[in-house]
Length: 100
Image (cartoon, rainbow, N blue to C red; front, side, top):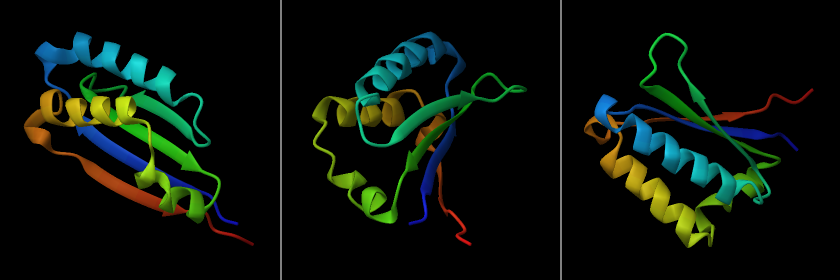
């Protein structure tokens, strides 16, 4: 089964960067027990640009991602999108692994 990568990229308000980093650190800890991999990357050239990467082992796992019952993680994700992301603008991308 092909893996799926789901990414969300965005800019964070410079004056909120410290609070954002604390939220992300906590979110990473919350999601560490999930069945998928979750990482956050910072742009090397622009320290206010970030990309969250989710890696799922299958399309079925990805499809059930929205049904997550982790209410605390969902609340933090909502807070980040609405309070830290510049103009609430996020870019989403979903990639499906090419199989042989």
